[in-house]
Image 1 (cartoon, rainbow over the protein chains, first blue to last red):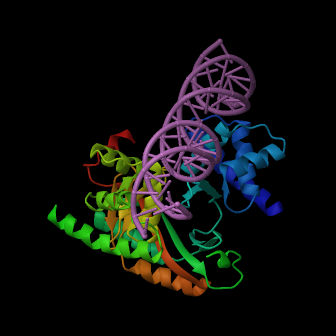
Image 2 (cartoon, helix red, strand yellow; image 1 turned 180 degrees about the vertical axis):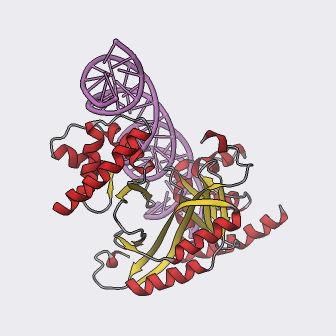
Image 3 (tube, rainbow over the protein chains, first blue to last red; image 1 turned 120 degrees about the vertical axis):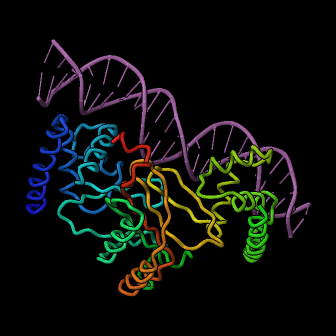
Length: 155
Length: 155
DNA sequence: CTCGGTGCAAAGCTTTTGCATCCGC
DNA sequence: GCGGATGCAAAAGCTTTGCACCGAG
């Protein structure tokens, strides 16, 4: 995990600077949560993260996980998604290419894709309606045409 | 509300046909909910709808509202949105132009806009990843540049 | 030493479920 | 009359809140 360790060292600096600027305390829990996020892969929800940390015998509470995630979202180190199932999904966002999501309506797998044209739309709509667009969420929903999708028959 | 009444007559036919095709019962509750949705305007959530119907002295249960909304979403007469606040928002979708949403990060107002280029992205990503994209959700988040936004100072 | 942050548990909210009753077909 | 649909209330999940205690500054 040398690569992820290096990534964590980088975001740790950013997070530290953010906490100092906002006059928030640099508690060990906050850094432990950041580390857990940046050394694991893919999307996760609060329960995932909480269980992972418990499994490492790290003492945290769900309340602190929620609180810290809010902070991390605010300083753009983590992105929060609502994929339609009333369950917030999170994802580390520093050092990864900006992307959007495609969700399989059969097996609910989440795929990622990039398309630069979304920025043009974002910019044009912002200009048109006189808004400063900060970010966006684009989710495509569709059925995989390949046979490999295991839930295909359940349709 | 003559226009909305006419619109309701139209969707009523579509809904009836759908229920017959799926061999679902044509209960008065289902049509009452459809009518309530198509004679009111804008976005709504389950509680809104439930209260509106109660105020009209119509006897429904939340369970039936949830159940019926699922059916209406399935037959494309209603669209379901997750705007990030753990609260499903719904919107009638027949007879209105397809659109996406822009949410003000200051006052949380929801604006609508149209951009045909999203279809191109949708189609291209579908072709590329071999998916049949059925629908999408695009939400832009930004701050209104005008002074009229009442929550501006709270920033 | 102060007071922001944490852990724990309780409360809050939206949504789902179980079951008796009702009514469309 | 059968079996799907409804109403009601209880239960289930995710998230927030209250409070006593802890520890960063």
